[in-house]
Image (tube, rainbow, N blue to C red; front, side, top):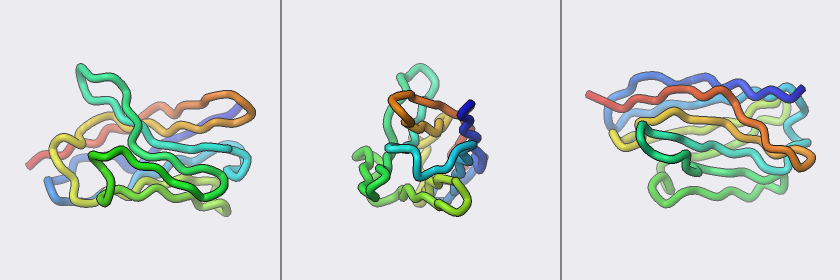
Length: 115
């Protein structure tokens, strides 16, 4: 069974930074695509950033230049470094992994940006 476990969420002031982690139960290099999504109250889940096995990355326009997705193969972990956080970044953040045609999700971690 494939498991993705997020951590690193919390409360941060506007302009601050957080780093989210997603630990996988399988070798991370087996995942063709890994990504982060978020869902704010009353909104649909939306793409934040993705990273392919080949090293290509993609970011949603609202986070481009502020967020960075990366993989640590040795630790089987994918990260989302979030800088210059804004109130509108408040949401539950979910880790996603695509492996052998299946889509896997973590349980989510809450990020709240507020003064």
